Length: 113
Length: 111
Image (cartoon, rainbow over all chains, first blue to last red; front, side, top):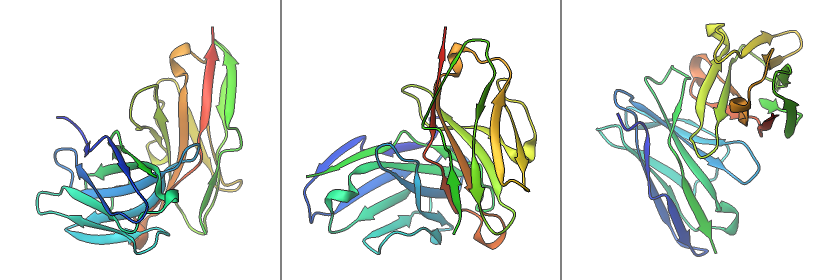
């Protein structure tokens, strides 16, 4: 089991562009959460997907959107990128929406220039 | 709003000394508390979950609802305990799935 996998590992974009990050959950997990981790800070919850729907959302603007596919994999989309969106984006999966134990991927490092 | 505070950004102890990493939280309810650890060049992974009441790698953590704290303790630190530690609070019930993390404490265990 490869665990939670994220792609790409690194990404460089310019202000105003759009980006899509991808995540495959751990085998047997059906719930995916996304986090933004700025340098020197803890992960900040963006949203959680379960049964292909956004189930919970943190304090992030609508520029941040997501999707979950029938195979439980997920995408995070960020539109109109700002310099402040530069961060490590983490994906975490859990075996059920009510299970708060999370398994994390290695993350995607996004740099916005 | 819920908040998790880890007052020490950096903590340094000698091998064999006791270690305590502090975590305080604010939440108007009964949350689920976790400690996650990130070793060098590895991904974030679960260390402890308060409802399990287990000892993992010699670490324990007790939820003190009166003081709203969930401090992580180990009586004798080892060099391999050097890592970044994050305290996290997760909602239960209808808001289950939302989690709030502290900003982490970097623990260095010196030989």
